[in-house]
Image (cartoon, rainbow, N blue to C red; front, side, top):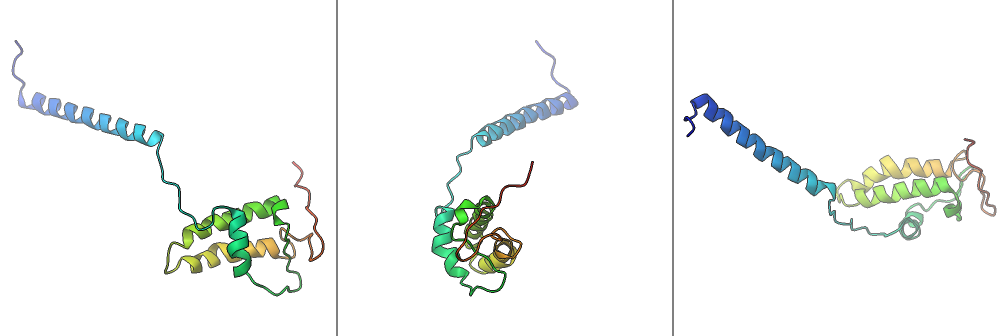
Length: 140
């Protein structure tokens, strides 16, 4: 037969039980998050190609100005693919905000990336209306 617990031992026992419960809860949360089943995002355009052809080239209608470059063969420029993919994914996220989403997108993502793509020193600097040239990568 065991002796009854004094009040301090009772409190320690209760704390110990609660700690065990919390450890079990944390473990179950970690296990659940180890392989989360996240819903796939619902996007308006399923690929960067679909976004460029279906939205981007329609939104950025520009008359060619001195120094501005665009390349219809953008898929052959790895930097362009990376930048346009980043633009597409951020656009998909921002356009959900019906109040400020697209304004935020243009100011923070679209216009700065568009400049990097089309400026005289940008991604398409070696391409022209009737010419296409992919530059070699930087030396490693």
